[in-house]
Image (cartoon, rainbow, N blue to C red; front, side, top):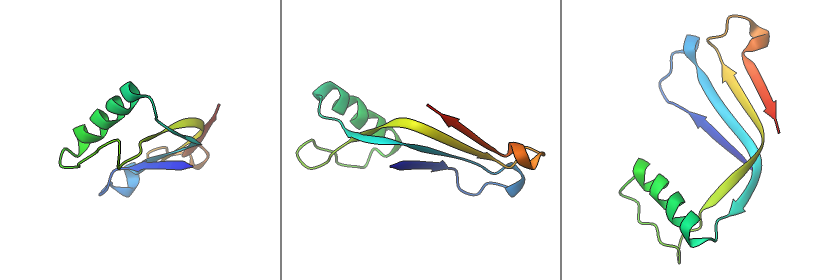
Length: 83
């Protein structure tokens, strides 16, 4: 599983994104589910989320890749962190 994070409308000279690779785990604990729901709704309050109809997953990271075009040295534009 991978999660890709990037802001739209970036200038190419400062372009930046992050990809998180890992294992997706279904959240079944009620407290954890409510925490995840609150995080999602903080970004998009119009969503209707209910445990009976929507699953929430967390990603256990194994590797993170950062692409940063603001680095002048081409060899430093990609950083990979492995766990």
